[in-house]
Image (cartoon, rainbow, N blue to C red; front, side):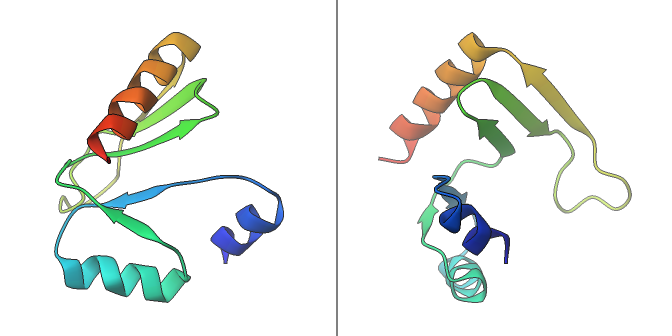
Length: 88
């Protein structure tokens, strides 16, 4: 799976999941990863503290998903710091 490839490549990642403990455990077991529980209702990817991908549609909406890609090291680094604080 993708997480095995990331690990083998030496790429560090953190996965935060909102929802029930049962859902988090299911995802952890399915992908053999450690997840962190959060109450934050967002979907995003921060890449090397330089770029950010926001998914701006709700996960429960039907149809296409919409995302916004930002190439802003200042913003991405600040957002990463906020998430790290929230996940402590």
